[in-house]
Image (cartoon, rainbow, N blue to C red; front, side, top):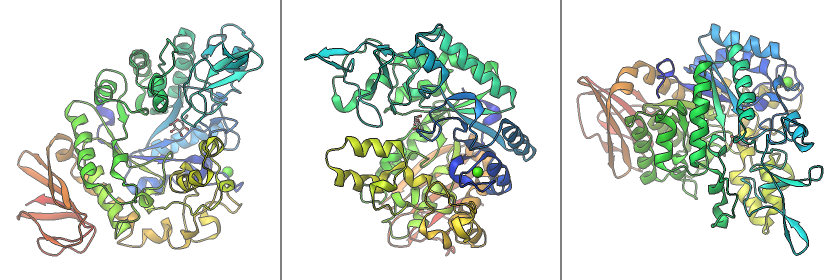
Length: 531
Ligand code: GLC
Ligand code: CA
């Protein structure tokens, strides 16, 4: 159900480790975010979503939580978090944090005690005996991890397998066990008490598993046995009561190919407030150009979610994908092409979320060897692959590391992120592509993002109450929004030629190029308002 207090906000996602390093140890931290709140506020956003900062062995950069009640010492302290929340609230910015409910770290005390069968933890995780095949002990079934290889890890201590659909250090929790709900509720209450405003709920589509644990029929799609199943919806309806009790808002990540019916059930049936679904991935062609047909479909679909009473998160990419500009780098004007995509997506009804660095048009890192990758997913994929050369090619373009490079603040050493060598690479283009330079360039991606968000803020009434009508003529596409005789048109031209606009009596609310009377130029986006 749509929660009015969140209606019409715009978010900014922060990958904490790469954002800003306040104490110069090479690692981004909580105080670093606090220092940059004015920058964030200035973009025109209303809330931040911070990737996990909990105590963690960092097998998956914090998505493997050792202690939900502690801040990882590399990121700061609980007092730093309290200070961040209070400084954010002073600026009228809400704070959303990542809540990982599908799994914990194998170093979490729940898992350690579960391995030793200490009550009440024995069944906190999903334990199964192995299968004996030709005198060899093998995993209980053919399920495969999202990060490649078997989805089962073996515990020498307990002499049993545990389910782990991500890395072997990330065992899945068992929601058939009421006690796990109780522990999660304590965590939710704890952060609600700290005045956190909401949660981005991680990997939520996977909390329900096929409880028969039989082999998946399609070996390429074994994730279907632990994605978007009826028990996930059942658990979420229960969690929804808990989130409401603590007045926490939720945005859920819907991986594992949810059906349209599933997506609507998540967002309209008292499960999650907002949903991240991934139709937009189909917009990027393999040759790094834009697929206009799928772009149209994606925009229409996000709108459909709203029409049906749900609330879509409007986003292009996040910390699990390469950079947006690189996904479309073979469009003739890739920066303007990105601006067109941003305008088309962020003028829809829903909740735009910008991923840190997107607003600068940051690009993929020019990787050359496997040793340069840090991500556990990249390493596992490489290790388990037969054709290493091909896998390396794939990773260069697609690795999640691309979006986790250091935020480019200015032209100083390490892009102004730190005075210490950072934990991850700084893209070599930082001297010509950074926040400080772009602040002062009228045609930069940063200026465009700010203007688009401002135009959105000025037209919220039409956006949230209007009726959308989609339009495509060859390479020009977009939509009209109509509300009480007010009209807005959002149109982009992805073709090579300027075209006459199909109507008159509009004034330009935003355009990324110098507007020539009644024409739309190549890679121009126009937001027009009826006179
Ligand atoms: C989500 C996160 C991703 C993480 C995974 C496991 O997909 O976005 O970064 O690796 O869950 O927690
Ligand atoms: Ca630091």
